[in-house]
Each structure stands twice: as C-alpha cells, then as structure tokens.
Image (cartoon, rainbow, N blue to C red; front, side):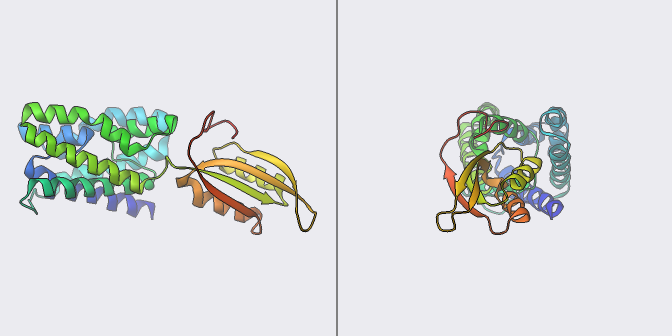
Length: 270
C-alpha cells in the first residue's frame, strides 16, 4: 500500500508539471522549479536535471532522517524524473492563471501523498521535513517560504508575470500539502487503564515520545487505575490507537488537539 501511494503521488506531481505548469512556463517549487528552469534554458532534460540536483540533498537526508525515509524519497525522485522524461509536455488549459492553480493543487496533492507514505519528492522537501521535525512548523508553510528563491530566479530569467504565476502555484501547493500532511498538528492523549505498566512499556517501546503516569481511582468502582499522558503528532494517531488496543481494548482514551507544545517534544516527557 505504501509503495502504491509513493507511485501514485509521484505520478500526480508529473501530471501537474507536464500538463499544467511547464507548458505555461509556471515553475514548481524548490529544486523541481530549478530543474524546470534548466530544462527551459538549456538542452538538459527536466527529469535528468531533477535527479542530479537531488543527489546531494538525498545524502544529507539519509544522515538526518533515516534509511526508510530516504529510500522512499529516492524511489519517488526516480519515478518523478522518469515521468518527466517520458510523459510529453502538453497543455490541458489555455489560461495561465488556471494552470497555475490546478498545477499547484495537483503538485501539492502528490507531494502530500508521498509525505504520508513516509517519503518525499526530494529537493527542498527534505530540508522542510528536517526543519519541521525539529521545530514543529507546518511543512507546507516552510516549503512556500523557502521557494521564494525560485520566484526571484523566474522573474529575472523570464518575466515577472511568470514569477507571480509561480507565486500563485507555490501558495496553492503549500496549502494543499498542509491539508493532506498533518504531521505538525499535535494531539494530547489521556489514557485511563488498569494495565498501566504494560501500557507504559508497550508505548515506550514503539513510540518515539515520552509519557507521564499518574495514579487514579475509578469514581464508580473505586478500583485503582493508571492515567497516562502523552503528546503525539496527528500522523501517529492511528498507530498509537492500535498500540493501546493491543494491551487494553477497554482503556478509556481522551484525545484533544494541542495548540502549542513547549519543552522537549521529541525526546522529553510532556
């Protein structure tokens, strides 16, 4: 299922590029946008340029994000690069603004799906994921901010109409990515269970978060309970629910959205 998601998301990005953005000289974000520039002003194919530019960041990402994430990212970059090379550039819509919006939306959809499958489309996405995991910023916002350089380049190389259309595309891409990939959203879990120590060990063994345990007493039964508090990302919720059910299917779990987290979210205790 994850492999299918990586392929599907990557192909959506290719469709957004070759059918909407490239025909109207509307650039995509990050290194993909720079690859488009190289494809437009040099004989180098966009797909080949995309692959070569991504190699250094893939190496950096391997050290920062782990083998699984980068393996999936390399797979996605290969699919996108081959797709850009094989799929012919063809304009679907005549309007540049319309193509900017739909191309940006399709690109954001594809990137978001790849993110949800524990990968990235390479380039600035890798930098965005590294910063997002360390600082808990919305990754779409980070990508939109970093891609300002692409807008400036496109303005000087082509024209400022193209640059502004690129801005529209990048803005839409960032919004769609944040709508699909919600890793930056934090949730607080209060777990009330009679199997507190088993639950504690199971969560600590399988979840990269700290937790706090309190003693409690059932209001009706007067039986002793343990209350476990932890903060997780929205993306981890399904896995955590399964972990809880494996130990105590009868556990009472209250899940609330968290506005802000202070302290060591990744390694410390809430």
